[in-house]
Structure formats: structure tokens, C-alpha cells
Amino acid sequence: MRQHADACEAVAKPGDGYAAGITPDAPDSGSAAKAGWEYPDLMTEEELIDFLRIPLVSKAEDYHNVIKNLIRFRDLPRIEICHRLLFPKESVLAWIERQTVPRMSLTRSGGSDTGAVRRTGTGR
Image 1: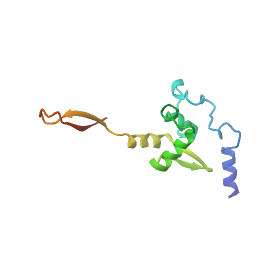
Image 2 (image 1 turned 90 degrees about the vertical axis):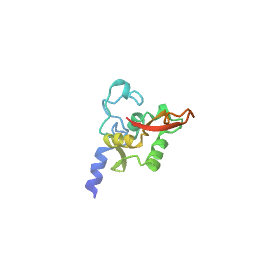
Image 3 (image 1 turned 135 degrees about the vertical axis):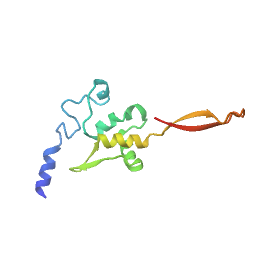
Image 4 (image 1 turned 60 degrees about the vertical axis):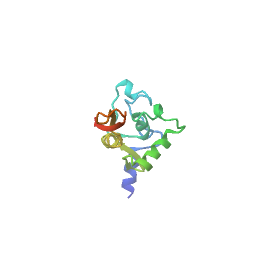
């Protein structure tokens, strides 16, 4: 059991850039997409916040609460390694696809002049 604990300590030490979610080539939060930086296959919570563009779409004061709610209520995919949550990029992308509501188009129904509108799914 101690061998496992040593491995976890080697991966994420307090104060280590990797433990803080900062990788050597990663830009500051909010600029990753603009800089052309690619997200890692396993994202930290900070990277996920940037990846999902939470600061642009949420009025929450603490973006970590947004992620916690997505985990709790929308089953956001994650794994735990050494007591730390990581988010597999491919799983998150698949989750986004499942969460995406199909685009709806509005069409007039059956040629009547009543002006009735019906929704039809157009897919993507």
C-alpha cells in the first residue's frame, strides 16, 4: 500500500506545477484556445473549466461549483487518480455530443393557412 502512496506523491506534490494543473506548455486559463494550445488527454479541473468555456457562459462566482454540479446532475465523465479528479478529453467530447440538443427547424405544417408551426429535428 505504501508503494501506491509513493507513486501518487510522485505524480502530484503540493506546489508542483503539475499538481496545480499547470503543464509546462500550458498558457494561463482562458487563453488556451486562442493560443492554439492543445488540451491534454487527461485534463485537470482548471483545464476543463477553460475547455468548456465556463467563464464565458456562467455567472457563477466559483467555476469549480459549476463542474461539481455537472458531475452531480449531468454525469460529467471523470476518473480519480491519486485522490484527484481528472477528465478524459475524449470522454468529455462524447459527453458533450450526448448533451447536445438536436437543432430544431420550424416549418409550416401541411400547407394549411392556419399558420401552425411544427418542429422537425434536422440533426447536425
